[in-house]
Amino acid sequence: MKARYCRQCGASLVRPKACVHCGEVVDEEHPPLRHHEVHPGANRFCWNGRIMTGSDLRYAFLTWFLNIAIGTLYFVFVAPVLWRDLSPAVVGVAIYLLVMTLLCLLHVGLTDPGIIPRGDNSELEVAGPPPMFRKVQVQGVEHTLKYCYTCKMFRPLRASHCRQCDNCVESFDHHCPWVGNCIGARNYRYFYAYVMFELACCVYYFGTSVYVIADEARSSSFGEAVREHVGATVVTVLIALFTVQLCVLCSFHSWLVLHNRTTNEDLHGVERNVHDRGVLRNILAVLCGPRPPDRVLGAMPLVQGKPYNRPLLVVKPAEPLPLPPLPPLPPLPAVPPATAAVPVPTGGPSTLISSSEQQQQQQ
Image (tube, rainbow, N blue to C red; front, side, top):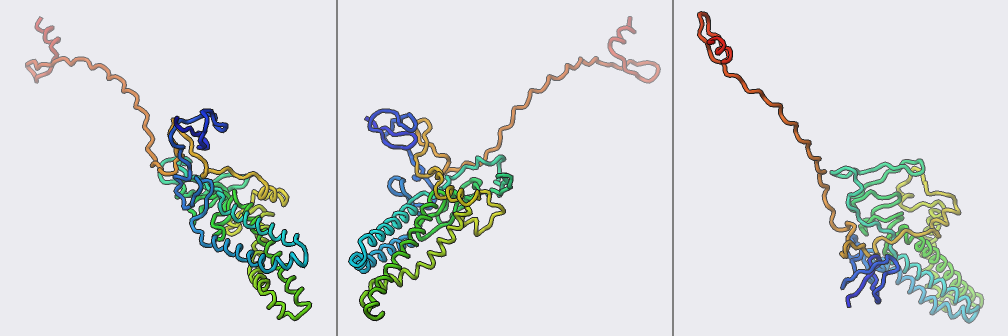
C-alpha cells in the first residue's frame, strides 16, 4: 500500500481517509516538498523544518555557555547557603528564573521570525526593470514601499531585508547574534520575555550573592567573608558586568513596546507611526496579539499531484505581451477593362480615337 500524505501539511496518513485540514489525500510514495527544502536564504532548518536558526551561531553558543556556567556556579556555591540559612523557596525562585530564561532563549532562537517567501515579479504592472519605490496610503498617511531585488517583491510596511539571513522579515526589529536569529513579528515577544527574565535572573543572583557575603561579614571581616565565599564573589562580579547593560536594553525595548515601534524604525526614523494606538493597546498588540502565520516551515501546495513552488527558486523573465490579430483587409474595387486606342491618320496632326469610334466612321 502506498503511503498517503496530506496536501497542506505533508503529514503521513495511516488510514486512507481525508485529512482534517484540506479534506484530500494524495497517493504518493514521498511527501510533498516543504518550503524550507527549497528556501534560498541562509537559515538552517532542523527536524524536518520544524525549527530554524540563523547562519552564524557562535555568539549564541557563548550566550548559552554564560547562562549555564554562571547558573552552575550559583547553585554550587550560593544556593546551599540560602537553602540552609533562609528557605528552600529562595532556591526554588532561582531555579524558576533560570529555567524560564533558558526556555525563552531556546524559543526565540528556534522560531521563524516572520520570513516572507520570495516573490516572482507578479506585483509589477509593466514588464521590464522594476521600479525602486511604490507609494501607498495607510490611514491617510503616504508611505513608500521599497522593492527588494533579492526577494523579488515590494516589502510590506515595517519589513526589511536581513543581510545575515538573506531574507525579508515581517516587522523586522534587528538581527541578534546573541540568540542566533532575526527578531521579527513572530518571535519578538519571546525575545522581550527573554531579556526581562535574564535581567530578573541577574538581579536575583546579584542580590542573594551579596546577602551571603554580607551575612558572613557580620561575624568577621569583609576580607574573610570574601575568602570564605569565593564562589559567591565570582558570581557577584560576573553578574555586575552584565546587569547594567541588561538594564539599558530592557529600558529601550520597554519604550519600544509602549510606542509600538521597532528598533529598525527607531534607527532610521519614521514620518508618522500609524501603529501607535496608546500604551495599553500597544502592549496587547505586541505581546499578546495574534502572530502572523508561518510561511516557510509548512508544506508546499500541490498541483495535479506534484509539488508546486510559489516561485521560490526560478524567476521567469518578463515576456512581451502578445499582439492582437490584425483585422482582414477589405477587398479591392474591381478595375474596368481598358479600351484600346489606335492612331487614325488625318490631314492634320495624328489624333487617337477609340476602336468604337473608328467602326462608326467606317460605316
